[in-house]
Image (cartoon, rainbow, N blue to C red):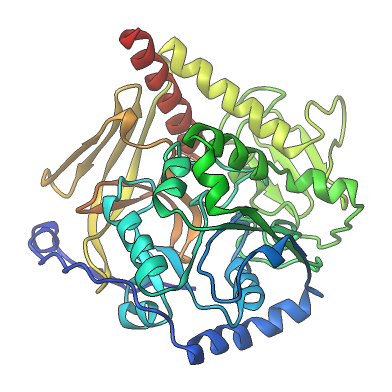
Length: 427
């Protein structure tokens, strides 16, 4: 899937008028049917099946909040099939509206900016639930998983549930990540997909619990490990490209600690610095071709990288400083390519400069609990996105190796460190 991109000077982009807010629209039945029909080929190809748990508690016409884990592009197709004919609006990243704003709104999408404080979003969700009598589908992780485990949930989620006061349903998928992991450049594997649709919380149960208790429950429900699931269920992935681009996730060699030298190709990932190679087996394990296997499990390797980033932050040695191509999002007409620049990330936060000195943007570490970063974003390239409610900057590194995953890890760990320091200061 591609996105409309237009070359434009940064001054012109910043001068463009801000679009007026639009209330969500209840999707017409014809659009709901169309979404279901468009989902059929992929669901048939994956022999899709599902279970319903406690769904008899939800009234036939009762609007609810649907929370779904985010694994791959098939997620919305699964939801469309499971929820039909129930009307539902979808919380969708604002870049998904570029070039197709009217269509996206007509099918019920609600725009939001990922990892940016969005005070309007909760109001739009309330409007859909209470005024339109439409359910709301939300992917609370906001981003696809890099390593197949859950990504962080916002601390505000429990409070959001209490404000909305609607029943909560969860859709949890199995096999969607294994079929189409983000790192693998949209190459599909032959893996069956299934899902559980579970009635999670009634309005009464939400009222009885604190926001903190709701967060704990959701953290537990959104705890998963797709590689472990593959291993335990003996899911065999025979495609020869299964380790292609795995270096996007496993960017640091556990043998020599070199960064940006890993190369995932075929069924192997190898360090270009020390030469050590690992086979990604058909059942999702890592095995060293020679010598010790430091990490047999992809999420364990990724967790080690996270720990390494945290140590760099605590020791004050962490630094991202790379040249980038810069695009901007200020409306839904287009993504605007405005030039080149430099992106720095330190313990002080992000600093983006460029466009011949016309761009100078700074973002503090406490701005967000995570980072909008992606691989092969709209088939343009690996991206790091920062910004605020007015403008988003999409930064495409042109040097420095695989920095996207490390930058997301650093942003998440830096946010935790910042929160701890604030808490200690407040005490």
